[in-house]
Amino acid sequence: MAGGKQSARQKMINLMYLVFIAMLALNMGKKVLSSFGYLNEKIESSNQTSANDIAAVLQDLGTKASEQPEKYGDLNDKAVQVNRISNDFFNYLGAVKDSLLSTIDPELHKDYESLDSETAGDEFFFAGETKLTENGELFVSSINQYRDDIIAVLGENIKPDVLDHLNKRFDTSEQPIKDSERTQPWIRNRYEGFPLVATLTNISVIQADARTSEKEIYNSLLGKQLSADASISEKTYQAIVIPNKPAYFPGEEFSGTVVLGKYDANLKPESLTINGKKYSDRDEKGAALVKFKTGKVGENDIIGEFVFKQDGKNVKIPVKSNYLVVPKPNSAVVSADKMNVVYRGVQNPITISIPGISDSNVKASASGLKRVKGTKYNLFPGKGKEVIINVTGKTNDGTVIKSPPVKFRIKDIPPPAATIRKQWGSIKMPKSSLAKATIDAALIDFDFDLKLKVSSFKIKIPGQSTVMVNGTRLDARAQKALMKAKRGDVVSIFDVKAAIIGNSSYRLKGVLPLSVVISN
Image (cartoon, rainbow, N blue to C red; front, side, top):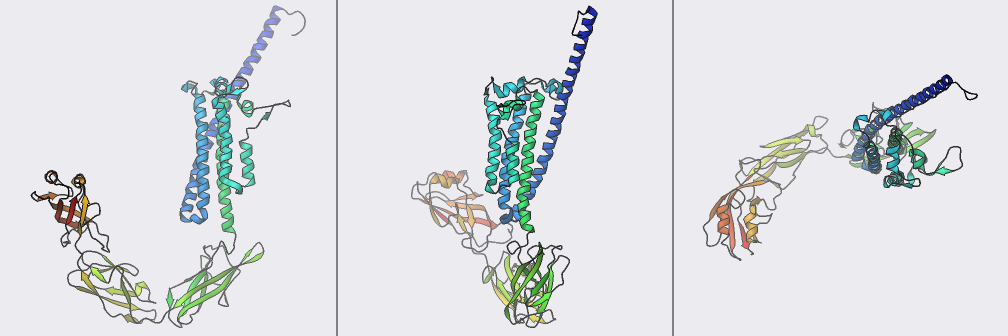
């Protein structure tokens, strides 16, 4: 075909071959563009999955940090910083893709064969043959900044493999030119002259690298803590003695459990020694069971050691605790949590217990007395001047203990005082401020935090008639009278009507008046 004189027919055949080859090349190029588009879809879908996985990890780590701040607090702080930096970087890359796509008709965004022009990418990143646009410079600097910021957050304890991955994935150094000893800038090597669909896919790959790096960092942070948790040492575990009850009688058999700081049925000790005696019994949680005769009245030591096998060596965890032995009780301990009296109209907290007897075996009775939980009771006194509390208890051997009756005086709630801005008695205030003030009532130096609601009051301005006000603020009549007050005048607020919020049936013994000296 290339030599000799060719006929018109041969020339036409040659031309048809050229057209056919061009059509094949064109069709192949379109298929490559579609492949890039489908690949970009896969990467973006994977990035969303990674984002969901990361959110779950962060939520779990946040929960751990709130429950165990000393162990997970610092790790959570680093993870939150890494996530914030990564999200900012990811969103910036997404904005770059949006800017590139904005040059194309939205209806063609999924028609990947139409995204064959390199014009959008070149105009966005490059300004001539040697310079970059502001967008191009920002693109490169953002990648470098992301890498440096993440390394700074992790600090000197960053794992070598994490550091190596960050440096490789976000490397923007000069790139070698194929079949040449020369190099060229990274951004030109990766983005100059590329079809738009390939540019978009390359940016999605950087987003994927950021998500992958983020997940590796969280695995690294948690891996260090999990490794520390798994290591058996005196620093990470603590032996705890848990008695079956808080105190014992002389000669009574002590019963309880000795465990490490974390229950683990799979973590079995080689041996356990308590006060010179070895124990081997364990419950379903892995806790060692111990029993021995209690000692003298008072505090007694529990001394021993757990022995565990780790890496072929015995690791010893010391046991050091104590238990209390008390005499058999003959009276109850009853105390008022607030004062040596109880008040009518409020729930008075009372603690009732008998040493050495479980709360469930203690019974207390009195008019208005109700158990809340354990040793805690509430006493709501009725009529009269005193209330008597009777207490009985039963020991483990069936002995009934009856405590002498305990008397409490009953007092009424003291009178509250009228207040403005939490001030009472005699105060100074500008006339304009008093006109806008809210009249409240409060119990001064009272041990119970009771909320009061004012329904009405009277106000007297010198030279003016007394004004009755409904509500907590001066109405129009009161404000009109107040306008005639002069500097130095004493305005009286009295006959304040108030009630306890939540207990309006209780009648308070009046409300102390309030005097306001007009300052100007």
